[in-house]
Amino acid sequence: MRILLIGYFANDEIDTGGQPVKTKLLLDYLNQWDLEIYRVDTFFVRNRPTYFWRELFRGMLVSEHILVLPARNGVKYLLPLVLALSKIFGRTIHYVVIGGWIMELLRKRSLLRYIVFRCDKIYVETNIIKDQLVDFGFSRVIVMPNAKPLKPLRKTYAINNLKFVYFSRVIKEKGILDAISVIVKLNLEHKSNATLDIYGPIPDDFNKLFHKIVNNHSEIRYKGIVDPLESIAVLKNYFMMLFPTRYYTEGVPGTIIDSLAAGLPVITSDWESKSDVLKERETCLTYDFKDNEDFYRVLHFAVQNQALINRMRSKCVKESSKFLPENAFALLLNELS
Image 1: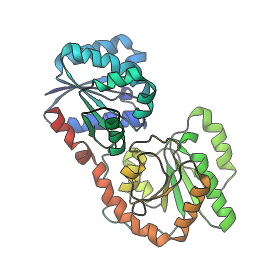
Image 2: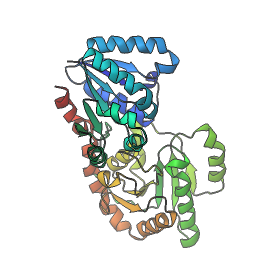
Image 3: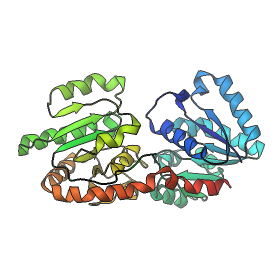
Image 4: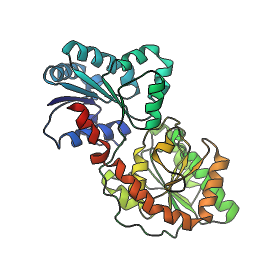
């Protein structure tokens, strides 16, 4: 079987963004089977457009199935062209959705709804996103969670510290300022010794402000970027993960998979698909979306109920198994046959 995989491989350079991580992971999974994979890197759309389009046509000529993993702009501009070519060449097109924002885009753009509707199969990360598409009139929608090739902890241990961790892109939209504010408030009002370690890439336009804030609070520390293969070793010794995202349309965030595999319960905002990924008082504690007062309340509850948090650790590890590639991507092989 010949498959054309179109996605952002970042020219094989290290990139911790959701799109390149998922695209490379899917390639690694498919390479385990008796398949011929022809890959096309959307990195070259702007950098070497002639090369990109030549490779795309070559892939179309030799492949039976087309897997495309576009980001938001790719859905607007690349997917329509790939769809048109797939119909000309008589290929089956599989649209693999990254994240949870697709309905937000389709509600605004009727032409894109028509284009996505014509894809032969659509893969989304959660049942909630699937239900939204089905309610919108889509069929052939398949749930395929995000995944990571991690080795979950074999055994969990009670953590007797108040070391919290943030493990994501360091941007306002991911709620980093919210996380800092509640930790600082907890220490001021309750004389706690809580700390917050922050890992993740910082965009240039936020770097100066971020470090100015961090330098004013001794309990807040920036620890750099972690090698993806070392995430469990880093996270397993923390008390809880903070995931204060302000993106309502998250799908299955990679950082949540890291946290579960490390046996690390999460304090999270109530994003749209959260209930499809985390279980209240089993793998997470949830606060109202964009509500820092409620965030603080839940944080204080966790500090007062450390025995509950420690009981949740083994449940986190158990839940992480469904986000391993061999489980999350298994149904894809059936759909390609």
